[in-house]
Image (cartoon, rainbow, N blue to C red; front, side, top):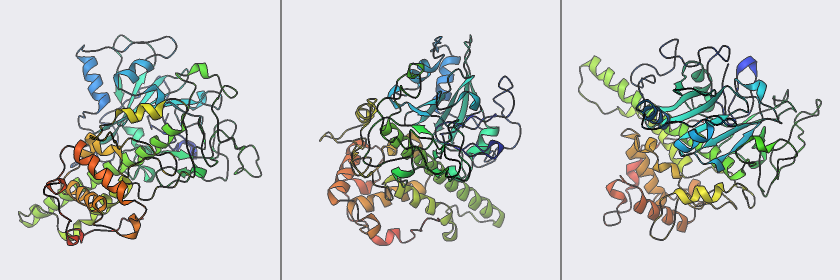
Length: 463
């Protein structure tokens, strides 16, 4: 069985469907679902050691359960879901509903019984109605996406089981940048939730136009342009034609919303979710490639008897290219315009914005625009995450320097011309007051316009 969630891809039986997916293990539902140290798992050797102990939010919660510091509460209707969300600080307002068959529990997923998905900055949680297990992806600051299952039946000692083997089969793939990660996919769904034959699918991120988003999802809220949500493909001769019903504030005519924690599948939550999945993957990618490059250089130096530990110039492209791509995504450089005002329905917009640190003027990187672009200021809130802070050197210094160049206008190349000077300055000021660990050049008392030659080694990311 392969467990998927959000608009992730399902590769079982050659199918590709929509939904944020969590790949799990093959076998019957009651078979062993979490396997460690059996079979091949990518990146399990040095220097990544993916199977090593982790300290992600779910691992931390399991530790508190093991020590008796806390317990999970089980409810007849929703099992452990409410308790899991509360312990992991995942807001119920983040709920989105996906009806594509992208889970090992696919038989229970349909347009009438979609999967419910919830998330915060570090954790994704998936719940299938009458399912056998809650599905989780939790981001470790060093190792990236870590995959878990929590059995739904009530237990004396509920256990989050780490599942690696089959999860990485799907979740170390081109759509995750070939590192353990997550992705969102949009498809042309049939009335049963499968992908219509002879139709394309779309990976979703900053660059995705709204017209190609949300296929296989329910979406509540209003937009300025039509999208693929809330619709299915019924015409076998023209499967790419959807019964488009883009805007919706009530899903009660399509499913029993009382089965879910809320009646919403909020469009603003969908947009945020899409941004951060690819941001997570790029952070992990840059982390991994930097560690691998440094390790390979150290190995080469040992073999040749050298003591030099700095990567040779011809090796920097192995991670600087990815670091540059991360910077571009971090500042929404290729963001597709929203095309008009966007309004959510669940209260997620207000709850999400209220969490972030604010500067003395009350500004936050979590403030929304929702007219022409997703956020008001051109730097992602994920810069505050532990995963970003754990970026190894020299990639971290490179990212901070490039970001400083762009926000100060030192890099005024055409590719960043869409950013207004006032917005760049505001983002710079917000970060100076709210982000710890900034390099010395960021400090107002010592900051000068960076020497353009310091970024001479900049590399164009590979397509």
